Length: 308
View (spheres, rainbow, N blue to C red):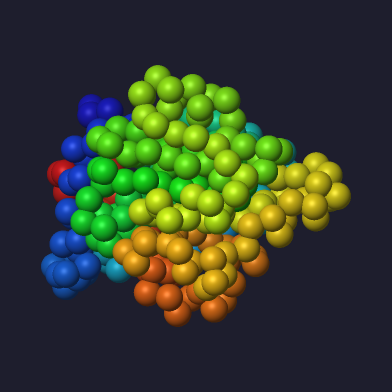
């Protein structure tokens, strides 16, 4: 029996597999009719123990557009977790009903436990402040489509870099591409964790920290904005003090490169002014569309329907 393939961290995929998923996602978007019923009679479970809009709905839209079906829950309160059932037991049960599972959980490492107990592929839709590999795949697809490459880039990540799982996953993925450097823009209280810094050092990439977005704006090829995540704070006063530290406006973009792209995993609170939405460099809503395309490709890959 062939071993089940899971996606817990983006590093579970080789760079060749990522490139293949990007190619498959592009083919899906160009030739949707060819994929319309490719997952007929296949079922995806979306088990979201934490609220989500884009990730959950894009997974569901992806499976439906492939001709498959979807079942699941959108919060822990509407599952047996509210009765005290363990993640492992939930997964073993649901694995009897479906062909593949996408799950989100507020506790770091929960998808690892799920993968150990699951008879079907597990996709990590985000675990606490740890990893969010499918968002990273959406980010990489957006970058490749808009910049034409995944190497030779200066990437600025701004905002909550401590709890931002999308940032951790993006850095982890892009460490493997040549001539990529990082500018980490955050207040001291929200700097990236030490293990992320250790990974960058081990990979030998150039990186630096700053609290001043305006000073580094002219050198960036990509600006990845993040929100300060209220749900990760234990102290409301700290959240209020930090939440408006960085607000991207049209005026601040005057010194940016004309071909820089602005990314954001969403939801946006107020860290990007709505006036920026009309700037051709703003790619965050397009990024959400890329998320559907790459999740379609990932489902086909993990189900063994398409090779990459």
